[in-house]
Length: 115
Picture 1 (cartoon, rainbow, N blue to C red):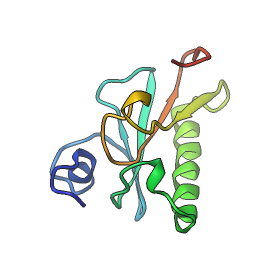
Picture 2 (cartoon, rainbow, N blue to C red; picture 1 turned 135 degrees about the vertical axis):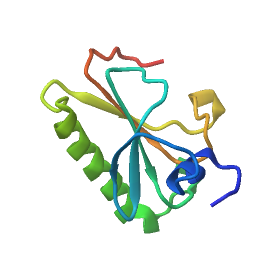
Picture 3 (spheres, rainbow, N blue to C red; picture 1 turned 180 degrees about the vertical axis):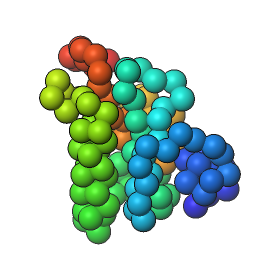
């Protein structure tokens, strides 16, 4: 963990969040500025700065993140109509926190292309 990482501080419980799901590898929380009726952030508990820092050793972690996303989508009632999972890498792509996270978005029509 880095002392200044916002998401590490949320994982540690130093900053309050609305938890949707958590286990030993993953924390899922409601986004504080939702872009859709369902907007949940899924992040590893361990600090990983970005997609570029992932290795083959992170296969179990990524599998868990996507399994949790599917469970949350079912629980939120957005599975049948569809949902989107988004990860941004770098400032130009919209990554605003240097801690790997995925956005689970649903509950309304989502345009394509997204940007």
